[in-house]
Length: 258
Image (tube, rainbow, N blue to C red; front, side):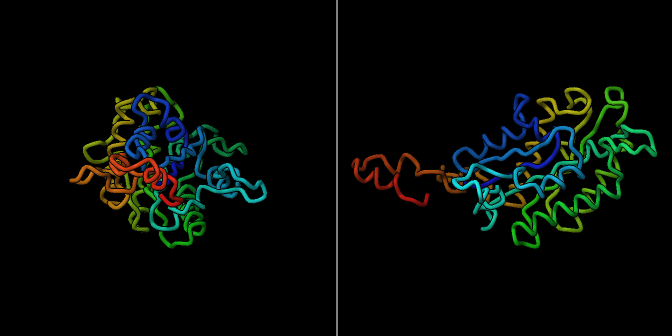
């Protein structure tokens, strides 16, 4: 099964919450072909998420041995060109929630540090996956309503979105630009001036779907002309079992690698 790891803030954490949430829609698209691991952290910025990547418990999964925790990044799919990671940060970094000069940093991260943090996150993933180019889709932070969130503004967000665009171009990584294209977000796509409404989630999903189809076509689970998915199903299609005896069906289902 294809692993899809979602890294980000509350907009990622809540991607299974709203009707038609973009994370849930990804899992629906990958029925029987992939598993979506949501590791969004509400309120987090790039600095804090970077620290989390050095904590084994952040990406750990249940393991038969507590001495050797199993990380999502240990999934075989990430080591045989069959995994995808989304990185969706910037909304909290761009929040000016503390007075200038305050020792308390709050959520705000200056644009230059944000840029460096995103590069460090990408490098961490590259090292963990033993590849110079990890399978990361970068997502720009989207619009915000200052009337609902006085410490945030479109103007403050611009350098953070531009950093994501610049890094995607420099590193040759796929980009979902939530400010451009047919599915660009507007304030009307937000439920509370920051988080996504159903229409906003639908646009994010459509943009990710298009990006996966163009940048990872071998991992897009669309049906082929024969009606079977482009990627391997978890367990055989029912038609393989139909018309064979019980023993043959059991043998097929008990094969170790599927």
